[in-house]
Length: 249
Image 1 (cartoon, rainbow, N blue to C red):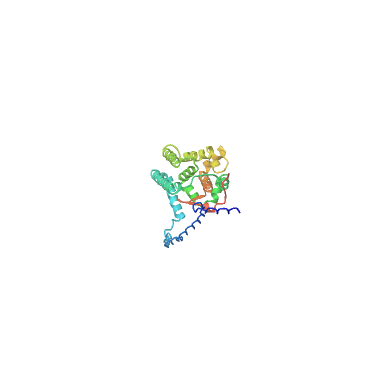
Image 2: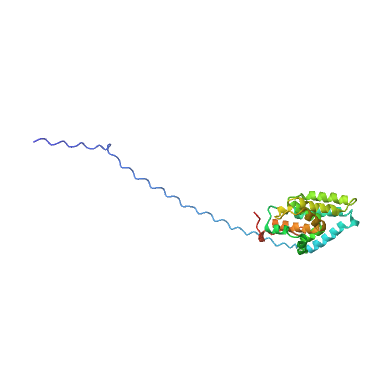
């Protein structure tokens, strides 16, 4: 019989492939710390309502009438220039410096520009814009031209001062006031900026000659409608929250 086969050699421990070690479990994240609760904030104290009552516009209108009458009195012709300068400065600080300039016309401003100046003045005869235009025509017209980017406020005042000084010796001031009203209405784009059509030269001159006060009221109202503001007696208020008419595109 043949001899039995030799036994297989024992397996070496170094030749064995070690099993991979199981992965370490991820460390448990620390518990999240809650955000600290903010301390309660004490409510701000309520602002007490103002106890100052505004000056009634009727009183202001009465003062304007007195100043306007004194300024136009021929016996006070040497006293009226300082009074007018005082009105100019007050109107600049309280109205012109706070008034937003014209950006775009509105439907209502276009309608107002195309209306008759005399009939429109009759409709607002008890409004502050009418009082200002009658008692302080130069300063009211200067504010309109300034906000419409036609002519600077102080340039208009300088023209008025020169015309007033000349009228004291040579001619009536009404002639210069007529030119100060007629030229911007007839020869500038004031109507177009407010959404209206350019006036005929003869029509504009006749209207400004016979009722420059009415022209002043008409364009002051149109400017207020275009900028959503309202000028009172030395004050400006916004009508933005109640506007209905949208800008013309």
